[in-house]
Length: 293
Image (cartoon, rainbow, N blue to C red; front, top):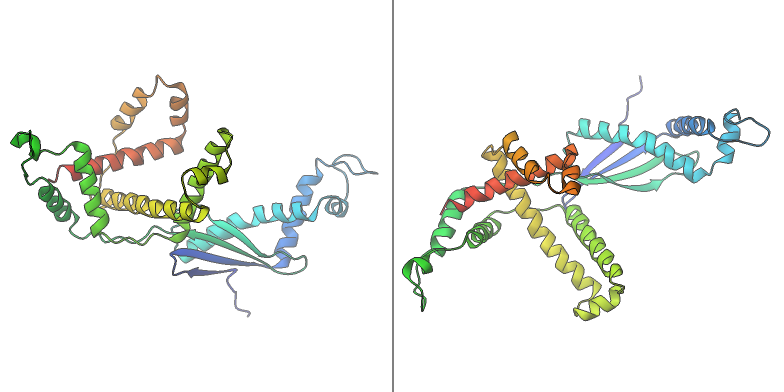
């Protein structure tokens, strides 16, 4: 009896990403190509044959190899990826980036998928840390022209910022590099779009703010790491403290959005509602942190 080999190999890198290399036997690829060609053949007219009646071989010959290979992968990869996640007990938090290693005809194919899991977070005694930071900040120092009560009290925004700073300074979180790259690329794409609308070039814009492409990317990378770290910490606190969002809280926000048709339509999408619930949940965490002082 021959031993069954796994069609994939999972590696967790030092940069925090997860790499899955799929090895797909040519026999499976060939079968998928035939299935793709059969489906495409229903809508193709080939000289000498009625529409949808051409032999499979003729259909394959009439369609570019690139298209056939791409569609064959689209049929194969979702199932393989799901299998790898299940067997490898992986919990990815982003859609994988696929990289072709080998897709030669007649050979087994190799495809690499890169994704990431949420980082492990040890909150420690975060409440004491935040409480200490807020109390230290609220110690009175006399200021000219202000009463005692005015000098002691911080604004809500200042309290939140101090709580956030305490969390970021005292809780270690290793953010997967691929997540930072995705955030940076998204931000750069948005910037380029805005620049183009203004009729500017990237070079002229960078010159005006005295930055280079490298320094701008580094700046965005640092900010993305801080933002992601903060998001993960808030999410972990919400999980530990079992912070939930009631339907009434969500409906209250949705009711307020009814006057804005575009926003109301957007929020009718279940995925957008899930995002909104996540935002409300984190807002509740921030409010609870602000009250620790």
